[in-house]
Length: 116
View (tube, rainbow, N blue to C red):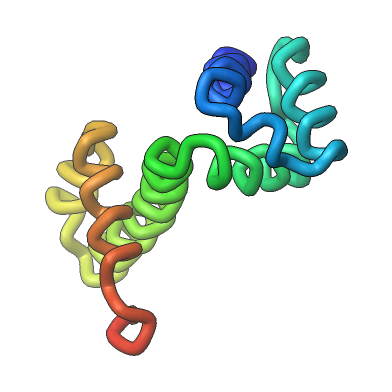
């Protein structure tokens, strides 16, 4: 999550009128977070992600998908190394962002009952 993304979300919120439907604390976070150089705090990232869900749901979904995809990819690499398939682990390490997003979207679209 970057300040540029927060700035784009702020502009989008103003454009579509969602900004005025946010709580005052959420508005303040959105305004102040665009002035930061980098967003490193996990708590602040989570707060901004919740605001982003209200302002720009499709972008919030892609961010969640990327995070879940990274977790799934790490788990797949661990499993490949555990069974001794180093060539598969190397191939998974070279996965691009599109594959990571695809893995994350597949996981998010799977019903909770069927998730592993």
